[in-house]
Length: 493
Image 1 (cartoon, one colour):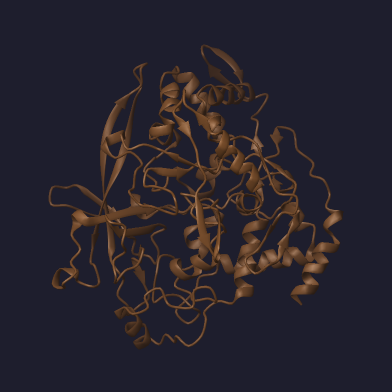
Image 2: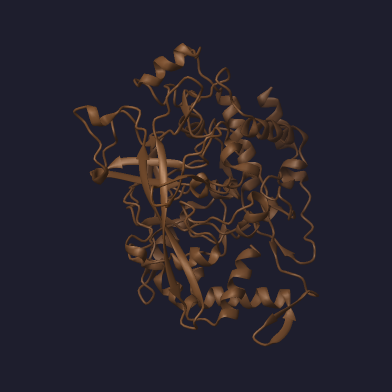
């Protein structure tokens, strides 16, 4: 049946109609561009999916598996971070993280934020020792959620530290830096021969990524990315990007997905295993294998003699993510008027000024405007080819390279001291900006950067240190109207 279904898709490959671009929009991802400004802007199938009945059915099935909550009878747990892909990636976006949800306060009244109590926290908590070794009874991720009757591995607490700053023109802004602590360690390390010293603990928290353009990212022309790395040397701005090479499935290649470009694929199998606790053919063991949660799960009726999710189902989820459309860039209204520098101009003119300022700040040197996909598209996790993503000109606003983002701002900068592949703690993949302006509409929040510390786009810019310092300073020295125009441009992407 799968072979017949894919053959039906292949038969219709040459019959895909060309997109009609409405006035006021420009294509972001070739034939995968969608013109949707609603709360479902990230969660709409591309036209090349919608125009093929067989492919659309597979997309819908993958969408259902992505959103449907697992239970302990269908594979959830014993410990987990979220109960479905959609619990952390609401509408294929970034569910509001509990890092900004208060769970208590200290004796002096300091608010304490952290692990949620409603089945998910919408964040991943990476833990390790300073020497890079994992804790024997925890692995790389602290799972702060568990099914009924099973002990969670621990709880995250976050206390925010604030510092006020000022632009050269006198406008004030504030940055927030998180301080993480872990409580309720299930293994009670304090009473063992292997205690966890808080001074020896590295903790890095990640909030969900937007799943915008993930298929196009997987179809990127790797040679073009390598050429970008070879050319990414701008000593006058302190910029020098590089590829992250990682080994997955026994293959050593460029990483493209993840905050540190630490993965070659969309990590569907890893997501089911580590995030949801669902075993599969690639990860057949429970994530808490050898821990007390296994016995607790057995007492609650969990069975460990079968895989929780099939390869076919996981590939349908992979297909769904590859088939998602990318919101078109919005040029702005040509009739709506705004104030800029003491005069009245159209919103479209205002956004165009913001784009000019984006380039003047040299943001485009890392947030590369235009890239291309390979002629033959890409391949899903079980070998299914997706040729519709091939030969496309796309505008992700990223070079997908690693850059040193600095350690100087508020004493730590964006250095999380956590390595991923070749990426050091201060190195991060350039975040793709397409769809970023719709995040508030889709997910009802504007928390940005890897751990959500930036509460808006302005703060995200002002956290740029290291290789981003020159652009940050150029932005800071702009007059307020120009800074606002640049942010308006980002909101149009």
